[in-house]
Image 1: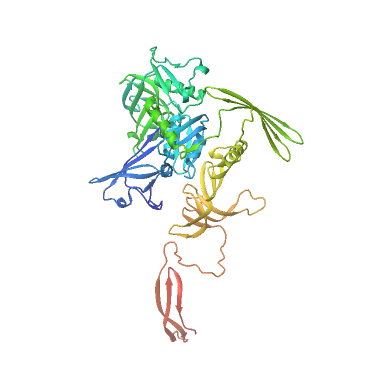
Image 2: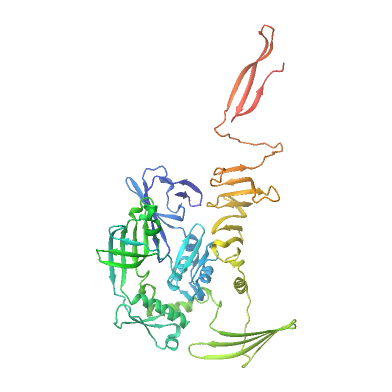
Length: 588
């Protein structure tokens, strides 16, 4: 594990720790790191609160230190400081948007992005109290009923309808299941739900009944009235009510399993007994007697001792009650909404409830657009006709029915959406432009241009950037930087040596990892270097170099019998780091 100080400067590599545990939680996507380190260890003074610890997969912030006589215990949480620091003091609202649009809006200016996103449904987020971008993310996971992976190294959130899969893994008593504790209850058990949205809208006009039913566990009729003012779309109200009733209409079950992670302990079991957060596994136990499939909702991993791993399984990631608002809370919400309507951060007008029929007629002289719009509400339905004609010299608009007013808006956000829908190569994302290799997927991302420079990606990895920066301790000193990320292997100037060459030959390279015959953390030359008579300073040779002064007697003349006739007694040679830097000698 690498240690960084509170200014993100790497200050050491931590060894000698024990009991390292990483807790992964499905419903929030969060992780927690804990470990013990000797109280008198060499690096104990570097393990301070708010310092950073980086593993191969994640970056954590050290949050708690529990001092002990022999070992101190340390606890760290995922580094999502930029999301926690993005504050919305008067609340946050997103009206009928996709989760990607909502989170992109919330993450603006944090440096975080939404990566892979497989959830396309639209929902409303309406947070009345002060919140943060992290709070918006957690609200979205609940409202959109989805799950996420948090990549703290790339500052990216990946969104999925469901994380994990059924790999055919099983926990069997006597094989890899040491202990199983089961808890179940029906305190929040219902078989019928009456959903009510904003301004009293119900599902009856679309569904035929005002309620939904699910008798998968019992034929009892137990009714729950669910009111949520965030819902203005009846279809969305039905979809989420069905999903909630699917959980409510069966007993809530939680299993705490003490398992032996054979897949990590022995590669022989990797294909049949490997598991991860969100996976569905078959549990077979005699005590308690059971054989059924459940999802893993929490894992505590011990990387150095995988035989100690524990998991928590459940038939749902959240209870129904955790994501509901009471009638009193809804009344409070409406009052706060009125007070905060001018200051809350709101994403709206991305889409509307207006149904539009469009007819476009094109000719050499003009383009005519006929629009028929039906504006629907719960109480009334009003239809109006609009005709827009675009000529070479003017735009004219005509609206029937008592000169009903129109407003045509065009802004940077709408232009961005229009462009993004029609290009699979160039996308406007966050505060920059992203170039893809044909499909809009993380592993096809190649380049991002934003206010900090040009950022380069390959096969889903952030490689580095060319941009501008300033000196850490002197911001007035500006410069051009070539930054290589920690996970990238090398940076090089290369040349196509011949016209028909199939590769480029590295001429001047830096390798952060072993690259073929090039050692890590070194600059490598692939061509002769001509210094043009400029100096090389502060040189140190491999294996060291001698720094010494040697005094000698220089023989100047010898007679025919081999006797010294003339000599100089003050000869001197001075060496610095193996290089001769001074010489005193006599001319014959």
